[in-house]
Image (cartoon, rainbow, N blue to C red; front, side, top):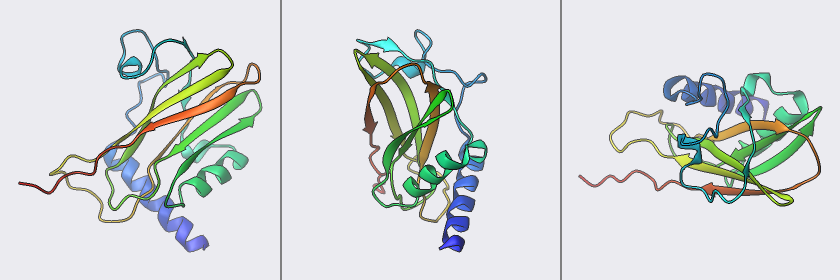
Length: 163
């Protein structure tokens, strides 16, 4: 079991190394007119968030991340830690490398915080790792008050082999 986790984390690290994280230099998202605000329902108050490097996650958050990134169906989690709430989105098992999950926007609508994420598939003719992967993303937000959390993951279509 531990060897499997080491292998999975190694594959995940390779994927990140080859595909990049796609973060903005300061790690913040959601500025007006940015890519992060496109494709979501903007009738809410934007919530500032920052991407969190997996290798620097607190131990309790890392356990949730490892659990979500080792299940075929994926899922999501909200984990309060100190003054932050960590939000994890996992797309589940994918047949190759090159898949990514990106949290594009977080909006507060009343008492509900909506987390919008999208899965990005590798390009049709791209060279990808030939290994099962578990793409996921982790961000954190300031923990100000109680809220309900609703996750919206837009799944990618697998690349077509049609010529």
